[in-house]
Image 1 (spheres, rainbow, N blue to C red):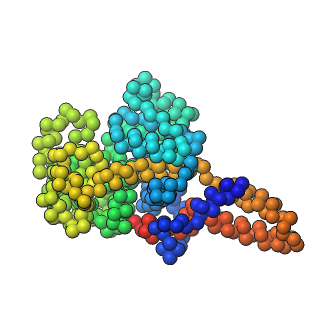
Image 2: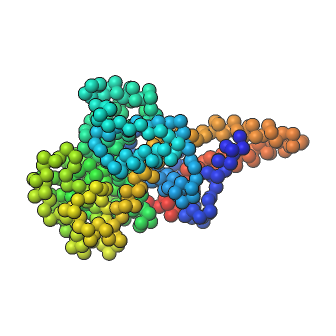
Image 3: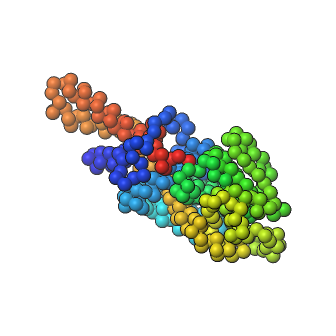
Length: 405
């Protein structure tokens, strides 16, 4: 009981050295109605409000500070297992997921195409039900978004999109956390995309406007983003008062941009198109010439692995390049995704009130006359209920330095 009290107290109080001090906290309306992530799938950021994505980023930053900077041990996923389906290989996705899930006390189970053939030897429906009975969540890195959608429909556990042909949401969460750390705020930034109209660009288009970010994208003719996604992005830009521009001129997209972003021109499964694509993307390499027309505080992002034709060494290894912090942040955002969607290892209000009741029983012999016991119960209940709400963000007591996106 005392260990639970200590954990709750530590979680609900300010920590020495944290970016936030009492004066940097603000109070607002409860987030309980706006942020409800428990048990939900993370298939695309299209399905999440800016407030919900914002909370995932806040949680990522909090986990990073507490584990990396403070050395805290947080076994929030102890006894839980994560199924990892990888139709496409990846250094960063696998390493960030396995190390991150293990840091939270969970057990990741890696499955390649040698172990599982989605929809081949077994139907997707059957696979989803088997995984639901043996794991607590699934992260799937697949070729087709439709496979993820079907997995999510048939599974009774959360499904997280590790990458598909249409979206790459976990990469964009890492990108936004990196930019938040560097600039202090996402609002008002101009993102300049120079490259293929692929899953990375799609995920940016489904989320950037929700943070008040502008997007300028340049793609070669014939390699534009999905028209339906462009239409939705235009609606988001209109709703949030941001700018969205599409062009075939890399310098036009880079002009005035705070963040220059590119990605691989040839994704896995597109190897046969290599010669054609290299020819189509001539002039799309990000160089210092590109950076000259960008904003004075420009930075560079690339989700890796990088090829020299996509960005030259001068930009890639420059102090303006954030690619390696971006790669590291894949771990912290993955941890926030699997941790929060499961929402395990933490007290709910019922457990908290039961604990307060037990605590008051222990105090009864020392609280005479009985009026003191009543006052004690009221005081301790209010204190721990407040601590509970602060920790779960129900009172929106949020550090400015972390949460002002």
